[in-house]
Length: 230
Image 1 (cartoon, rainbow, N blue to C red):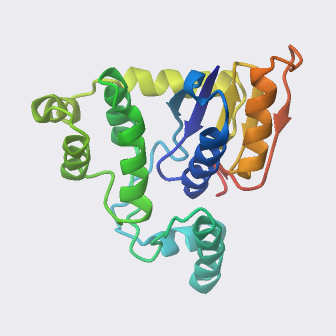
Image 2: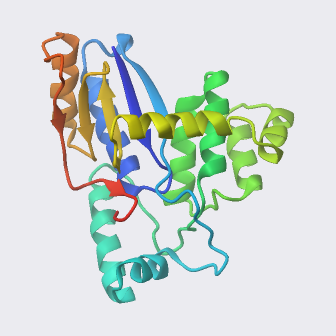
């Protein structure tokens, strides 16, 4: 079985959804036969934080709310993250463009380090409050996962794997994916958002039994990030 997961390192629900899916996968009897592929999706491809605004300030500006309201909204997301043992640090989180982080994850796929790099990128952003737009940060993350320093430096100084990021995003458009995280099981069953582990367990079981209709089905939730809302 294969599972394709579209996500963005700037999406708080993507990390939560990853944890819920991993919990379900760990309990799944056929987990050894499941191939998981993380695919790129940018919520804001043109993001630039030249003003060095905080995450709270940006959220307040985006939705025309007060900073207090933005903090309360983030608090709700942080509480959801706590349910899967993730301690989000929204107060110190550094808003960043994630394009180079996605390029790094594609390079990691070529050296069988995608899962570890994906995990460390998400942790760096949401828990450790590191800047994913900073090449030194990405270099350190790559090296901590055993990636070659010279290869990493060349990657970050050039545009290698940019086409791979764009292909994933074009594929998402083809599938009409408008929010992340988005999970596709065996090219048939789509699950949108940070669903509870029980939902993922159900889908894994159904997909393994090949009992789904050819047209596929979709489960959805509000716990997802879109280009205009998160």
